[in-house]
Image 1 (tube, one colour):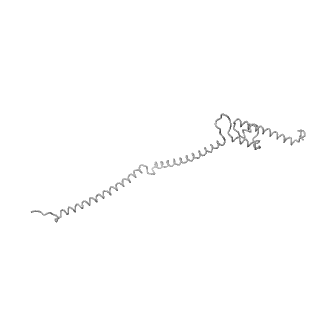
Image 2 (spheres, helix red, strand yellow):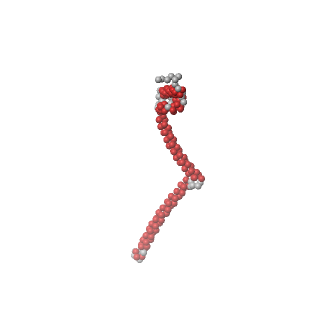
Image 3 (cartoon, helix red, strand yellow):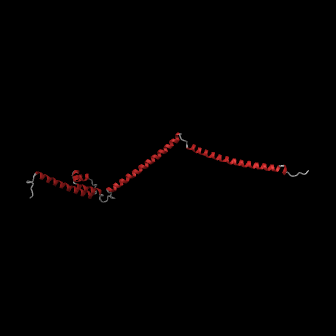
Length: 189
């Protein structure tokens, strides 16, 4: 038995009215969802609720509609002639790559700042006069090298002096042997 509006209770009539209103709003959401997908517009809960003329809470109360919205959000728009297709996943991948590159660049900048700090510190140290200037350090190295060279030359000179002394001694001995009376030749008188 079908009830007529006159015989239905007010509570049942209100519930039936709410169901009918919900079905009409649901149809508007589906129509707006299809229109947005066909036009290639960006699909979000807010934009779809505005397009369908419903409140966002209506979409959140109807999980099946919300899942359809999120599924279309993840798909690339299919607008003709708009160029390469960009999906949410590709944008997230690009964002991740950009964040990793930014982290690498930040580490490199920190490394360069540290190196610059070291070089500026060394320069300030040398300019302050507290450390030995580079030219004095080079001169000290040259002095050390020359002192070693002088020592080597003195050793060579001492060896030659010893050789000369040995040769003189041998020469004196030879001269002594030659000039000795036993080796003297008989003289004729």
